[in-house]
Length: 557
Image (cartoon, rainbow, N blue to C red; front, side, top):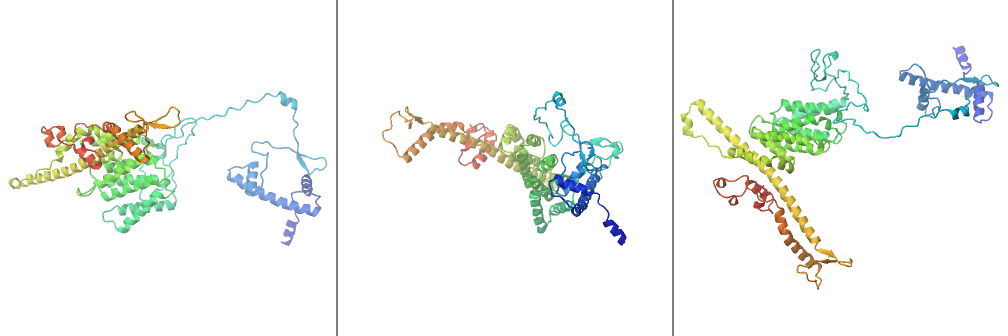
């Protein structure tokens, strides 16, 4: 063992001592003695071995079998050393030659360049002028197939474990090609590899469990408090973008399976609003999956088990959520508002139950007075002709007539009476929603007219003053054309100008207000032959109640 150690320590270095002296001489170092040169040669060999070991690691990590200058430069960068310059990947091998004075010293011979050959050589082609060519990288989340965009390779089907509580993809029959199915992949749809950390899976499980627990009618105060905490987390936390497809699928499935579970639907609408409010989540890619659930909660025929439950507030909440989505993403996606408007208008004009009509009117009202003016107002007369018979109170059943009926006929009559009462109550709700929507529309029109009248008065007051001929000062026009001999005080001048402007602007204001038109909803006395001036419009009464400073006769549509 001692002999091996002594032989190892006395082994000569692969770096020659003369090479160390020659390198020292090239950098201008003082002469190096033999002992110092041997020590430097040994240390140089040790450093070179380290660099080449790291270079071999870089080569293996790059899946190559040939060591290149790039691997050596990467190893030097790992050790915070300056890389080699002039030895790139495209350079050819250099030929080293021995010096005549010392055969152990090598050098690279510089190639001589003939200037005549360089001058007579053909000039290279000039570079192309730099220009900018725009193209569509993606249109509504879909990459167009153009040469400028990289070709996306077909994703191989990779089996992944979805979070607990989510359904697995259903296998298709061999050879099925519907919706992009690939028969070579065993009839399965191509699955995108989605990596979820354990923390995100745990977060998803906890949030979905809270939604299911707090969405019960007998939920405890503790569960409701935890639900509010979870909703705040969904609306503010970052890093939840990878969970959006799972949340979207969860909302869609829960809405479909619990269409008559009113507490569960309330919680789902709150969850959608929290996800939409989060500024760190890209929700645009999932709007086409979230909007059907919201619209369903607005115009669905029945959203509760018992008809006595308050499903009207759920429809109001869903309508405001839908308007919030349109207001936030309407500029980026201009087609979302017209599509929702057409859906609501179709639900309003079709022969559907009053609950659907109520949701459609609430949705159009939430979208703004302009939408109400363009959709509801043109169809208001025909719709009122359908709604007015339902507003009449139903006739109760006569007890004496019920006693003469058989049991089956009596039960049928009682059921019809209950149905008439429910329809009358629903019609009252629809009428209230219709008055709110049309009243807001009329109030908006009156507000615009008042703004125009105010602008007219201010413009008239401004144009009373004119510049004198010398251009040094302004003079005010008098009513009778005489000159004002005594200057009035600022207070009197302001009050007088305000009165004059008010007198001049009064006809303009009256003409700017929405003109009185024939009333759309008249009382029974008006329909029996009285004149339109004798009765007041029901919708005008609502608008005048909302704007007390406006006369009732000026609020007719």
